[in-house]
Image (cartoon, helix red, strand yellow):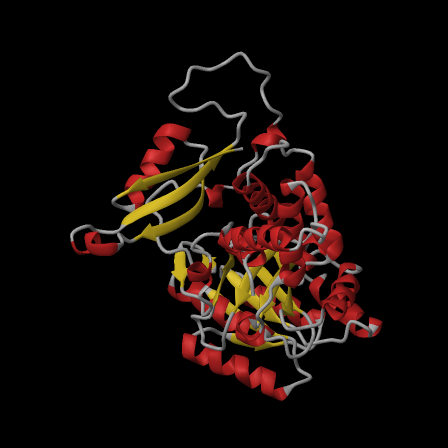
Length: 404
């Protein structure tokens, strides 16, 4: 991987410089504003500096092609979300479709430069070694020392050791002996993004309604999450939306969804069985999306899981999508048991709630790796419809690599 920095008066100009030199496959790793110092700050405007990278096997735009063996397709994989094809805006922690949503945490401020913390730690270790010659350094090889620091950073952000080791193992074999900290950090950053994958989001396609089921434990926020997503489709996409609730165990849940339905002007039907869901399907045959709220069930209760499976199987696979809603504040051990229990009966995508109530998001990465289920949406507050957006792999990777 080749990494270079470009400076210009504006962000757009800097990105254009990067693309002109590195080509259209360049990816933006970092953007920061540099303010002039001293007396010159009175006469000069701040400039923008971006750090861009490109695979070494991709020929520079302005270079003549060399006779080299073409890289395998896997080596050339670059997620579309990484490439800026137009003028970038301030990137939020998450993105809902094309709409930017400001997240509550100041992640971008803390990540003005991803390597600043690592450089400080490396300098501190070198200084400590010089002051205490008898002390054995953690690693004599700077590459290994840098990798160890990044590994510790992942662990401190609650990435499971198994997955942290997997990342390190996969990038170690691709690094050169004299690889810089930039190269190491960029390789790990991109590896995390690739493992997170593209978010799976709800799409309105076809002439028949799509039934979107929300399953998961009690208290994770399924009903509020449904209202947030439904309002986006109703208001932004002008979609024809309906609600169905099978959560008849809690009167409060039905009334809560009924309140949202009244506000949004969305029809609501309460069902008690698969047969009644079939009737609802006929009733809403000319709708675009039908959001189905299910009762919160314990992953330990097989009978309850069977009830949910029977309800979902009322709708054919081609006409349905399933989203497992989990709280980011739940202990990893309990998340594992929940996902394993639901994996026995169906495939699903992942929604994480309550991101505003935790300082660490390692479990998002852990559960994505464990289940191989695609991430989709994340919520970070109670406000409907604002506090939700689709998962942004780049921002998750940045937070996993930053300090606490």
